[in-house]
Length: 450
Ligand code: PMP
Image (cartoon, rainbow, N blue to C red; front, top):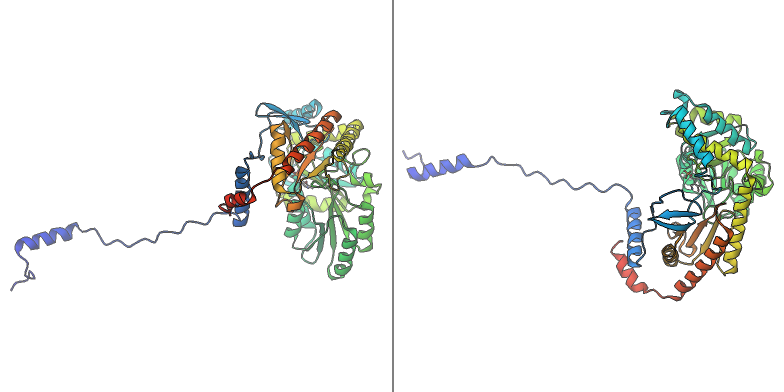
């Protein structure tokens, strides 16, 4: 019987050889879909859009510029000296040899780090010296210092109230306040900037529905350079049995006759405020945040605030630099006076040149409104080319019609320098607002980024 299916001997051999060479049947592996990129797509597209807009307008990237030395009234960037208006070195203490020496001595004595949380690993005397000096500014029982100003607001606000409570914060509140409020789980209401009547009304409508109410404001607003009505806030808070927290990041060393902040500026007893918050990064030329208040409040935070208990203590050189800066602020009130005079000089010079400075009180922050993000970005770029470093604040950081150039002043600026700068800005803005931009072409270039 032919059991070779009719194949000849040769064909059979060839078939067997082919079968022997055949690769084992492979299963087709599904190609894994690429992982979606991390981050929020809408944020990524906003970043891309701003970048494309800059390129389309021929503007150099104004972010992450490298300063080659200490940023004061002037600063060296890429080998060129600029008039500088982007730093919070309000009293010119960053780089002061006494502050630098204090930091160096602390390094020699304690090293550069305390390596762990103070609660378990122990603190250094410099921590408590700094905290008690900070408490004294507000006539408070005590204070606590943490490693970041931003983290201070997040962890403290997030830890003081909870789901049964209400947080009312100013609509222009710093991101750290909003993040803290979100973390707390409390109901959150943002009231219109400095609108005390509306705050009063909102509290009246909601106070009965919640266990506790915490009002959070800033002592000196970093976008507009204006201040809240602190006396009215204290009155409203009392009437509604609400707590009041004030962020003094831009007030310490800046407003009030001795630089003690908004309470001194407003003539209000600082003990009327439940929670004082501030940062070490600006006037105090360090890095970190603090809370000052009652002994019970500070004790609670020291033993339970996650950003303190589970985070490293302040590096000794940073604590020493902040403490020395605070001592100099007390000892040399002329620095505060000079900063305040500079703020007034610059505000008046800008106004005299017909510039719109919004609601700035002429403290350390003076915005120059430009009416549009494009004009703000182009003006900042033109000023940079002319040797002046100022940041444009553009949409979405502010509403489009609130776009601006934002000037931070320091006690180190010279009055004549400020007069010149005001004239310079006015000249550049006049030129730019006279120029037309082909918005159609620009939109075309931008659409690729969306
Ligand atoms: N609060 C306000 C009002 C701020 O402006 C800032 C930062 N500029 C912070 C808190 C956070 O402070 P730091 O940068 O020191 O972390």
